[in-house]
Image (cartoon, rainbow, N blue to C red; front, side):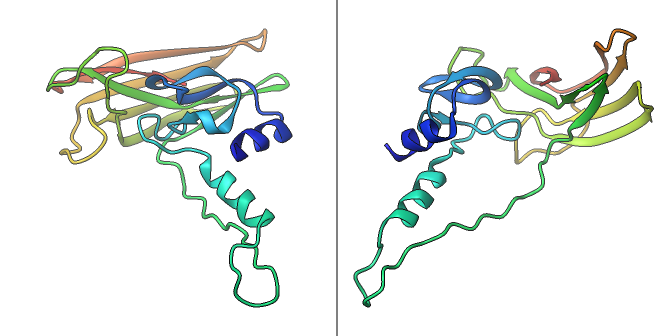
Amino acid sequence: DLTDDISVEEGIGGYHYIGDNKGVYDGACTPKDVTSLGDIQGLCPEEPTKLGSYYSAAVAYFGMQNDISSAGDDEQRVATYTVGIASPLPKIHIQAGSSEITLVPFGKSVGGSSISAATGSFQPTNTIVDFFVEEITPTYGKFRINYEDVEQGADHDMDAIVEYTYQVNADDTVTITLNSVYAAGGIIQHLGYI
């Protein structure tokens, strides 16, 4: 209920990138129609397959609105402190005219080694082993990413390497091109971007 209250107060609504919204789960950072912070989990772009949520906002709201202990004469209210940890995913910011486009490289393993391709099944988000920038100018960029085919507990070798290029066009659109340079993992990977 408190996450609903926060959502109304903050004007939360519309399409947002999230892994799961009210059981509409694809384990990927895809746009889903969000009406309440209490209905979503799988924070994007880092961990769409996990259960990360915004429930801590409701806990903080409760702690600020209510005396949490009868000890003492004064009301005891709690503020929440959080620590922001650096994202494990690179974000490439591309200026296109007066707009900024954010490109986040992203990969999923969707089959092989007992990974089910069925909708709603767990499919690992690929970890990035290496990120190499080859060239960046105000209108062009080229980089390579080496992906691991699972989220954790693997060998972190070269399962797939993708070359990404982007070009800002004269009409302020951006063309993004991917080239599969190398693939040797035993798991089917879908590699792209958000």
